[in-house]
Picture 1 (cartoon, rainbow, N blue to C red):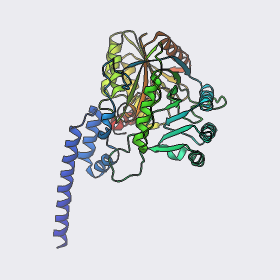
Picture 2: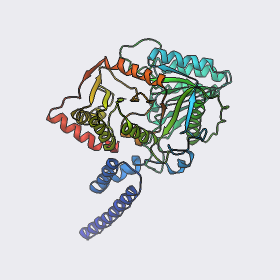
Picture 3: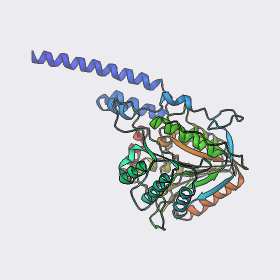
Length: 443
C-alpha cells in the first residue's frame, strides 16, 4: 500500500512538473529574448526543473507588459517632441569626471534649487558622501521645495535609513523601486532600476554612471575612488529626462508629478535614450549595435563589466576585420568577481580577433562609447547583458564634435593608467571563465 501510494504521488508530481516545464518553455519561446538568455533558461527549466522553475518565477521576467505603452520605440519619427527617443538639444554640458567635482556639483545644485529636486539612483550610501547629500535635501524640503527621491530596493540596506526617515518627516517623499519582497512572484525581482538621474527645477540634470556614495564621489580626494563619469546638463533634453523620472516615480508609488515648463532648444544635439523592461524593444542595445556596424575608424568602449551577448561580440570582431580600431577599457578587477570571470573569456576572444584590451589599474565604473568622430554615448548602462536587456537604464547619445572630442580626451587620459591585454588564464581559470560566461545570461 505504501509503495503504491508513493508510486501514484511520484507519477502525479512527474506529470505536473512536465506540464509546468512545457508551459514555461512555450512562454519563453514566445518572448523576445537574446538567444543566449533563451537557451540558458530553457536548459535550466528542462534539465533541473525543481530549481529552474522557481528561479524563473522569481527572476526570469524581462519585460513588464503593463508599462510598455508608456514608452515609444527608438526609431520614433524625428519630428515628434518629448517622446523620450527623438533628437533634441542641450544648452550646456559640463563633464563630471572627478569625484570631488561631482560631489561639489551635487551640493551646489541641491542648495541652489528654487522649486523642485527629483532624484533616482541605484545606490545611496550611508557614508561621508551620501549622508551630507541627504542632509542637504532635508534642509531644502524644510524650506518648502518639492523633493522626490527614488531608490532601487535591491541595495536598501546601504542607505542611511535614519536620515531618510528625517527627510520624509521634513516634507519630502522617499520611495523604493520594485520591492524585493512581494507576493505572488512575478519574475520581476531581477529587473532593477539602474538609472542615475538628478533633476533640479526641471531645468538642469546630472546624469551618468555615478551613484551617491564615497566610491563614486566625495568631499575630498580619495586614491581608492573609482574612475567614473557623469554629466551636468541644461536645456530642452532635461524635459525628457524628467519624463523618464516621472514615469518611474508613478510606477513606484502612483503619484503623478507635474511636468516642468518646456525649455528652450540649445545648440548641442543629443538623443535621450531610456531602456528597460518598460520598453517594447531594447533601445540602448539596438543603438549600440547599429553604431558598431556603421563604424569606420574607431570603436572605444568603457565599462566595468564587459559581458556582451554573441551578436555584440561578433559585431566587434567583424569591425576589427573591417579595419576599425576596437578598444575596450575595463578594470583589472571589478567589484563583481562573477562578472570578471564571464568577462575574461569575452576579452580573450576579442583580443585574439585583433582588438586592443586596456585594463584600468583601479576600479573603473564609467559607461561610455565613442564611435569614429561622430558619436559619443554616456549613461548608466554597462556593456553587459544585465544592463542591455534587464535593467532600467538611461543614456545620452551625442553627435556634436565638441562632446566627441571631450570623450576622446577622457579615454586617452584613462589609457595612460592601464595595462595592455586580456586577463591571463590557466586551465582552471579558463574553465571558470567559460562556466561564468555560460550562466551570465541568467544573471
